[in-house]
Length: 337
Picture (spheres, rainbow, N blue to C red):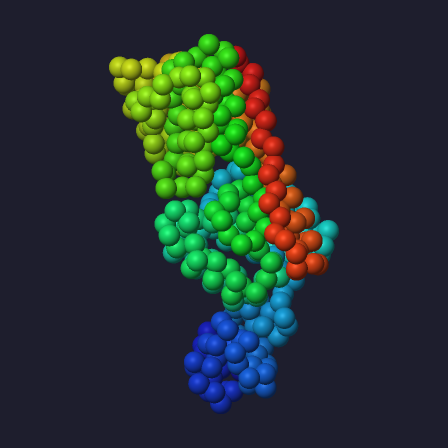
């Protein structure tokens, strides 16, 4: 009769090795003697040890699984990204293992450790935080190196030694500012996320670049900072509406902030979205579905996922060579000004 809830202790006793040896087979198999490693793996299979996927993967150099780590699986932007990734991995008969890091450093490390345990064939990765800005980029790089598989960094470039695919958010926000200036606006506010985020740094710099290009003096009263969540977008917009000094135009720096902004403005105006001229970063599917005109910086998440997955396939086939840095276009789509 097979025992349920098999533990490392059970495997160690059956294999005649220590629990530490079993742990090393799971986490750092390359340092375990081949005969011992194969014996432990065989015992895992015999006892139906969970996670079974990890046990199967350990018996080969790598699995047929591609890992994907993103900040938040629930965000529709990343849902579109997954579709692009899947179109490529399906063609290559590869499975996908998804994880989220919740924009949290410790969760990021845990997700990377899980990918190492599963011995993924390659990793598509969006870092949780600005590791370079925090002075801990080297630690992250060592973690990625220990995965022993190709890595493609998506959506943001924080200086890792790997292939990168992302959008030029700085240039996109600068162009958004200039479009508003061309429409006659001089009082332009920006709603942005966490200041330490590399995305916030780049987007805010684009805002400053646009003001400078238009010879508009920077006014900190028009900078509203929150987090990249719908609730934060709602709360910050309510604060902005209540201020005496009012902008005439607003740029929101991701789709969740934009949803919160729209909710707050519609509440204040009984559904009239024309309180400010608004440009959001990323599309909002519901606006297109309802046929409501919406100004946005169009970042194609599907194309981001597809391009990153294609690059990863090429890197798996040819591991050597100079790392590639691919920048995707993000056109401004404006329909109401």
